[in-house]
Image (cartoon, rainbow, N blue to C red; front, side, top):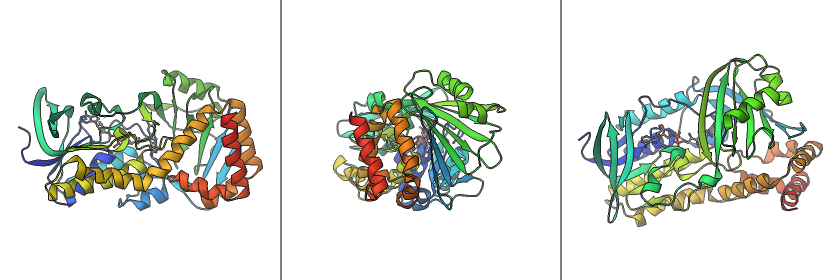
Length: 404
Ligand SMILES: Cc1cc2nc3c(=O)[nH]c(=O)nc-3n(C[C@H](O)[C@H](O)[C@H](O)COP(=O)(O)OP(=O)(O)OC[C@H]3O[C@@H](n4cnc5c(N)ncnc54)[C@H](O)[C@@H]3O)c2cc1C
């Protein structure tokens, strides 16, 4: 037996796993994290581009080493190369080193008394009549049962456990395949600008991006509904007129693949003895694929509810439903709007995307965005934006173009 007397087992030592663990441990629960890899944060598959307001809303003090860059501007390219830029007077987003972020969160959790079991793969949930009672783990070629009062599933987009336990799982049809590379040098891009490339030619079903670091290197990636993201990526880097210029001298040092769930949160995120958080619960912005702020926001709630449920000696679905109530109150509306926006964007033809980008540029919507935008809470931002004539015209165009 690896450990006895564990109150909460967390599946996955990613950011949402570590933050849930920390919150539960702070309330006195005995917590263990099972992480299948030998090192937390590796392999990293994420750009780490997050809003500064979003990160400041969380109780996470980031060290300078974790923040690789701060961003003031975004440029969107339409399929035919129309350009729309938004520039803010001061940084609105930052680029995090994902490996260091994951390790930072893990260390804080361990300092609070959480146990970390590396190289421990969770094979399945242990079920009893009244719900979940632990996990079955594979560790050093042996299989063991790890009993606990609560399991928090933070296994990320792989999300295998729920399916096996007959619980509602991720909508695979709404998952895109991400690919990201690290390049040593990128040309003719200011270091505080991210570039986003829309259109089916290079990234069918999503978009491609270039996110620079201050040292001249960059993270470049795309996500797509295509089964062959690698082919899409090399086509993009060689044949997209702008990207091929930016990347003409670059060498790739790391190439990673990972799915991104875009279908909006799963229909139920709790069960007797179980909570689901982060990518495993599809708490990811359907518009941009950003899951860090949303997932971490929900992880805070999951850890607290788990901690209180141990204190109150009540791990029933009824008690744990408080988690879903709270996260829905925080991000439910915005998630719903972003899901609809994703649907609208997916339905836009290339021509209409061209027109939309050109319209935004002509109407100078960027000036309104500067005041209205909250990168995370896009539903709320859209309402604020639509109150302004230019924003209203763009919103109206977006709605009409996607219907006709
Ligand atoms: C290419 C790409 C770029 C992205 N860029 C951004 C971005 O710029 N900004 C942003 O906000 N989001 C971005 N995302 C999304 C972001 O990476 C995720 O939302 C975030 O990592 C979710 O965190 P998590 O803790 O839920 O899952 P993960 O980070 O995936 O962590 C899950 C952990 O669980 C472990 N695990 C899985 N299964 C098991 C098992 N059975 N047993 C034990 N351990 C297990 C894994 O090893 C992993 O450590 C991007 C995603 C991709 C693919």
